Image (cartoon, rainbow, N blue to C red; front, side):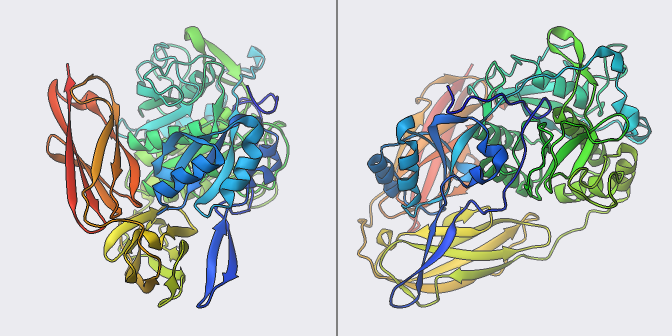
Length: 614
């Protein structure tokens, strides 16, 4: 099934970790034309492989993961894919990700051709992550990790909050386990795209028990948090195997359901640019992703990323566990040896691994955040780090990070913390192209943006019409002059921070010298792809439509029964757009889904779809 054969363990249960400092989103190169250097950004192929931990992983042999430049013309992409001989399998628009199918023997050559196109910002293999339990001898005692992190003292201050949702992206959860049933509030299977989030191999059920096993019920074990609900997101097959794209999809689904904390007990993820994109997206939307460090016991040069927490494991005597991975990416440690938790078929067992250290930190974060829900994800992250018990050499180090998580002092610090109201707008600057330059072929617009609280997105508008949005630094957009009329056009860049403050726009004028490849004045063509008009539906549904407009697309807005649900910027001349309708919250009967598309010249076209809920 896979390109390499290798035993891997979901992080809590066993194995890899690392991260690479190389920016996977592209290399800037200068090449001359008459008025300024042309900015060409070509992604290096498989930069994530520069991390030895990721390079050792098996991969899906017939899949490539590509992230598209915001603003890339869909027609140009379609022509590129046809020329290279790859097919689109799935798109995840929140992080501009496209999953491509390719013949295994042609993967390397296809990757090289795609990278040279100028339309892709990142191109990676689809790494495979496995999950397997690593049980310890039952004589080691029961739940010694709770007093080790001062959980009883924390419970005197709070037992959590029913209003703060925790998401578990894992192998699923046994929903009827007697020690979990009252805490699991539902879930979804992003691996098979259905509602079956049951656990086929036990990893997720064990992780769920560490976070949230029911307390005070005269049964089994106790979770770190007693009140926080848990959303079970299955991102693996029956054997516990997941991939980069499924873990990213799980994070994004969790954010869409309102989860503030997201636990990922797979590794190594510190260098995985696809999962990083999803974690950054989560942070920009108010959520914190906590991940396990890995269980090879090796040291890796990974630097991780600021938007998440990576957790290593310690023993009951505060010594670094022999299996815990080390490196500058490690933020915290928590108990990870002989952790007793829930198991399949209503049972219990002892397990070891950083897969259990991460959910302990997730549980502590839930306690701390529950007492002060107005705090930002970055502040919760800082509180956990600043209140950790320093271990190893003095100060932060590559083995223990900031130290061992301490629940009681973290909760106290969160109680006393004051959420600052951010009214300071971000700053934005134009790097390329030069104001007044002339372009007769595809070019890159590059921007810088900064904000103390964090930049959520940078928006490029052309002639006052939203063109494309980039949510991750470095901020790059691809613009094809052939999609616009010849002549002078105003480009404006605007940054938005995580508090919603907007920058003053950075503007420049560019002369588009290419002959237009479009015919202006035509209406947008809207075609609903799924489900069919008049269908009877149940549960949450994704509604997909294709849109085409030779004038260029600007925005799409979805309505449910006349009420606006979501607005998104789009670019290019065609696109596939998706709306996730939480139809399980809607009343029985007929409902009207309306899609309104605005093109680059402000013309509006709408189409309706009728769906029935029994």
